[in-house]
Amino acid sequence: MKKLFSNFRGDAFGGITAGIVALPLALAFGVSSGLGPSAGLYGAIFISFFAALFGGTSTQISGPTAPMTAVSMVIIAGLVAAYDGDVNKALPVILAVFLLAGLMQIGLGVLGMGKYIKYIPYPVVSGFMTAIGVIILVTQILPAVGYYPKEDVAYVNQFKPQAEEIILENILKEEAGEGLLVLENFTETTRRAELITEEDINKESKTLAGKEASGVLGTFKVIGRALQNINFLELILALATIIIIYGFKRITTKIPSALVALVVVSGVAVGFDLPYRPIEQIPTGLPIPKLEIFTEFSLSSLTPYIFTALTLALLGAIDSLLTSVVADNMTKTKHKPNKELVGQGIGNSIGALFGGLPGAGATIRTVVNINAGGKTKLSGMIAGVMLLVILLVLSPVASQIPAAVLAGILITVGIGVMDYKGLRAIPSLPRDAKIAGIKVSSEVIIMIVVLLLSTFWNLVYAVGIGLVIASLMFMKKIGDLTAKRSDVKSLSKEKYWDDEMEMPEKLKEEVFIKHVKGPLFFGSTSEFQSLSKQIPETATAVVFRMDRMQYLDQSGLYALEDVFVDLKQQGKDVLLVDVLEQPYYLMERIDIIPDLIPKENIFATFKECLVWIKANVKDNGTKNNK
Image (tube, rainbow, N blue to C red; front, side, top):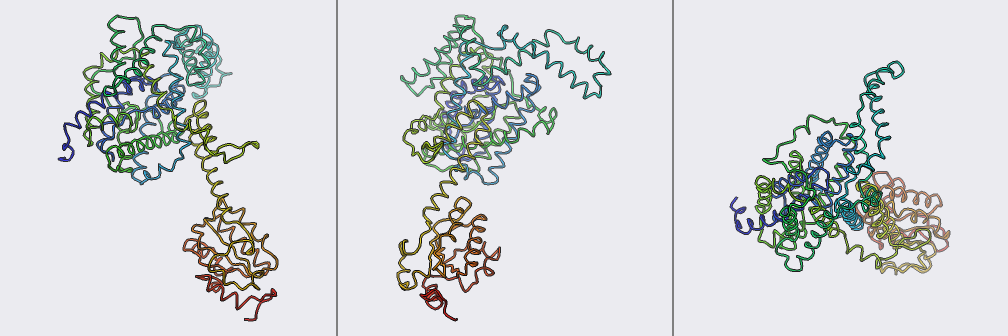
């Protein structure tokens, strides 16, 4: 406890500053997600406090971030559509997915998985981050120009026929669930159909219109209508916000430019009583736990989203641990990755219980905290308390913020989150793969695939596909490299090792020495399996030098067995030299040793093997009698 308050003044200033920086982003991410500004604010409050309290990075400031919000947006949109466009009906399942993601993060930390997060390939992360930027940037175009598809009567009316069909289908499904036969209960069906009101059709039409215009593709579908229906006041407010954010940074970086833009543009809009569109009303008072998470949904409704929750958990882990590395570099400390995952998981779990967006360690907020004097966990906890005070005291004022201002803030976030370092490196990356006869860079392919799939299809699946492609390409590279290093050559063409120089000249055609260099695994077995066909017929003994084969997997083990069997069937002696512990163990487990290769044919050094060769191999291809 004493250590926690050892830097109270610096932590207080750092936490308050970080909380102020977090405010506009929390509100903007909440609006962008579809759950409203309060969800972003609640997430920032609880994640900041509890991730700091239980986490493993002293100066980390956590809360909703661009990547986590983008994935959350996909989850929310899918579930809201599944519940007929009713956010309140979908909310228990949405928050249950967020809670599950938090629990998974705790599990990752308890299982010690923090140290493995760093093995996710950079091209996958780069493509994903750039896609996040594109998604945020494109999807904020409509609110920035003041166009809302659900409020475009002409556009909504296009969906009325489809809306009527869906409502009728739902009636038939309800009757089927009640055990009613349509043909026998036509009167009942007709009665229910007649109860459909114009309001019901309009509501379903708006849901369909919103769904059709959501995401990047949806934005492109309605961009023409948006440009024909620009609300110039909303556009001016958004542009003014963007200009102030970029312009104020040139004056000073000590005061957050996003906060300056929020205060100035909102102040002008409110002060001059402009007819702008405000954000949704932020509830006053303390956040209330959403206990319906445990009462108003079934496990079966959550099952399809387990992989989605895992992706959210992994993304939050990556995001947080990358920020932890930045904090380490600035403070010359060392974070505890597994403890950090537990802290992030606790923060996300509690945040979900109160209706908050999931989040992660936020780099900009963490840097601001450190520069302002924050050194201990207290700074992150103070940042959460600061946001709670703002919620309790200023929520009526915050509810007057123009929606276009938050759209402008998010546009700058989208531009800033893209991985320009990875994009700039594209021309200089080595072209190490071929597609349709054209040389390309495998890393660029992975980056582009993840970028395109994330932007135009599905963020969650894009990451999974990117990881699979990256793994396959990595295995191919390692397999090719291993095969190249372990090239199959006759002894007369392969450079002798020093201890092989004593081989009698007259035995060089009788003895084939194979230097096995590197691991023998499923990516390199094909080249090795061709070995028995390339050994000269004159050779009566084959020596495998295995001191550089550090690892052998099951595929490699059976490839090794196949080669040994082929050689034995050809009447050749197989000699093993310096077999390392792991390969030796596996060969014993399936009885290659001693059933196929007797222990007297296994030697610790080549010198011992050479003694056997001189005693058992003649220069005419026949063996000495033992």
